[in-house]
Amino acid sequence: MIPAAFEYKRPMSLEEAISHLAELGYDARVLAGGQSLIPAMRYRLAQPSVLVDINKLPNLGYMHEENGMLRMGALVRDTDVEFNEQIQRKYHLISDVSRVVADPIVRFRGTVVGSLCHNDPSGDWAAAAIAARAQMVIQGKNGPRVEAIDQFLVDSFATSIGEGEMAVEARFPMPNSLTSGAYEKIERKVGDYATAAAAVQIELNPDGTIKEAGIGITAVAHMALRVAEGENLLRGQKPSLELIRAAAEEARKIADPNPDARGSAEYKKDMARVLVGRGLIKALRRLNVVVA
Image (cartoon, rainbow, N blue to C red):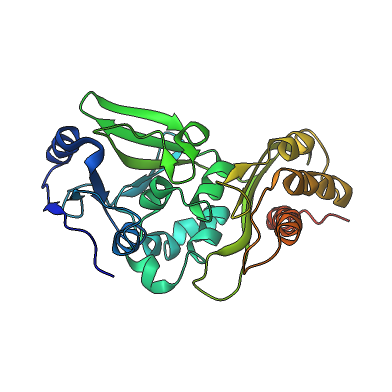
C-alpha cells in the first residue's frame, strides 16, 4: 500500500519543530521511529498532511537519572533500553518490556516515547508506564508541562497532547532496593501483538509488607488499564498466594477484551488474571520473597 500524499519537514531544533506543529495543528504528525505511524499511513488509517521528522533534533536521545527519575528523551530507541546495563540491573519492569516489544527490527527504530504517544490498546509500554507511575513531559509554544501517565493516556490511540504540542520525555521513578517489577506477556508468535499482558511493580516496607503496588494490563480492553482495586488490596499487606490471587482477580474483573483470532473474550480475561499473578510472584522473587 502507498500512503496518501504528504509534506515532509525536518526541523533542526526543538523550537523549529514546535513552530511547525503550532502552525500546522492536527494536520501534522511527529515522526520519530515510525514503527507504528508509517504502517498506519501505508494502510491509510492515518493520513497526515505533514510529517515533522524529529530525528535530527539534538539532545533528545538521552537516558539518565535525575531528581529521583529515569528520564528518557523522545529519541531513545527500544534497543537503547534493552541493552542498557543499568536498566537490566535496576529497572526490572522496564528491562522485561524492552525485550518483548515486537521484534528486534522494530525495536531498532521504535521509541519508548513514540509508543506511549501512539497509545495502541495492545502496546507494551503503556501498561508498564501505568504500573511504574511514569510521567510525560509535553512541549508546546508556552513551554513544557508534566503529566502523570494516567492523565496522559486518554483513550485508544489518543493522549492529552494538544494541538501544536509534542511529547519530549518519559520519566520513570527510580526504584529503591526494596522495589522490583515484572512484565508478563503471551503472544501467538514473536513479533505479534499481545494476546494479553500485565505489568506490575512492588515496593516493600522494611518489615516485608507491601508499601506500594502498581498493576497495568494491556491488550484486554480499549486501552491499557490500571488495576486500581488490585493495587489497593496489596498495599499494607504481607505477601501471600491468597493475596496475589485476590489482586489478580481484580484484573479479570475489569478486563473487557474483544474476541478475535487470538482467543475468546473469556480466555483473554482469564489470561489477564494469570499474567498479573505471575508478574507479582516474579517481582517478589526478585526481592527474595517467595510466597507460599
